[in-house]
Length: 509
Ligand code: NG1
Ligand code: MG
Image (cartoon, rainbow, N blue to C red; front, side, top):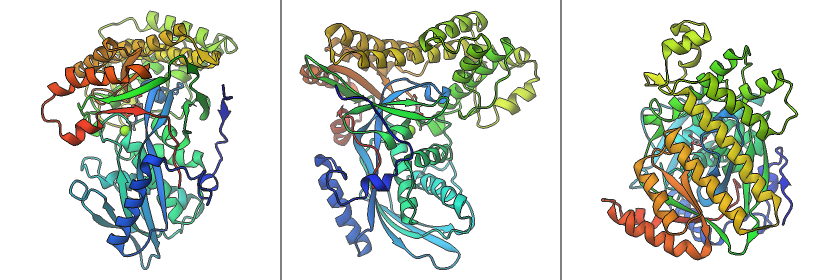
């Protein structure tokens, strides 16, 4: 088995990929025609050749759901669908740079032109859903990055033509692909080389400008992945990644990604779904800490207080930081079951009283970054999902890493972990939906070892681990028993419904 590789975070994207060496610039063979078409259309639109093309892919998360923003480890990988952006750099005259942006699909994504004030930040209205918002988010992050070293920088004007084939709102992170590729394009256009780490930091913050308080998993996978490996991603105590190979088995292991075509737009449903979960986990962390007499320092999670941070401080207090992580998690789970005993959830008044603060203080300290709509916060269930999911990620990785070849027993175990994740997402985290549950059941019946939702959920995408010999049977079962019963699906949607995920390369120029 190939050794696991540690990636130097300071590795420069331009150094690695902007070479004449065709093997380094690895456009997957099936994507060559798309790249050529992008450049051809660019020339038709703007009358000249682009200077360069920036690319960033979507991702599928294999295991570790809704725990990146709690700073626990996750195991995603990039997929081969991506966003590619052809760019021509032009000098900026006067007080405003101009951006002209067009798309290979102009019916769906009409061309736009807008100004970028030389000395002001870009403002995005998250309530106005426009396709170029994600470009603007990447642009805003890139400008902030450029201005850090040179506050007087005059951003270049740009002509841009773009092609994305990551299905939107589908749980394989079209948004991260879009934001990462855009930020990379703008930085490069301004003559600066950016490290993968810097691109990650700014892309995570950029995406929050669109109104979603996400963790950093998608952007990490989009930027750092390497073809053929899963990306073991750690956020605590600081960000790091490791490339994990998938060992061989008697039969080739395949990850199949299937859309549910139930779309949940996080920017709209956030107050009830995604952002609410971020808030519930934060509240669980501070309540658990308070009950243990621990004052949490702020960490770099979206709201500043993560379950991982509480876990660490509890272990420090108990002198158990050297104990294996699995055992630490067991005892964190134990104390959570005891302390957060209310199955029915907690009202704002109850949480404020547990924290010894007023409701007004609770709101201003923890619930003011974004709107949430909830009478009760299900601290127990949300925290238990996260700690158990963190354990499953450790188990999954250990199982992959222990043997050169996976035997039937290990494969069963990996499948079981995926199924347990799905159950926990359904029951404790309440981020599945009936259609996703159904897809998982159909796939398991047809021969998948493990099936679960991937990404935020409430619809979106599912991932299935199965032997190569069952791909046909599982795909057919999904078509017959699920897709054929969904009305109103276009031919294009049906063609994109099922993808065999091949762990692919991250961002490059
Ligand atoms: P999706 O729904 O695939 O974009 C979201 C978050 C991730 C992570 C997962 C749940 C964004 C940009 N990403 O992924 O950070 O929290 O949900 O594990 O919202
Ligand atoms: Mg997304």
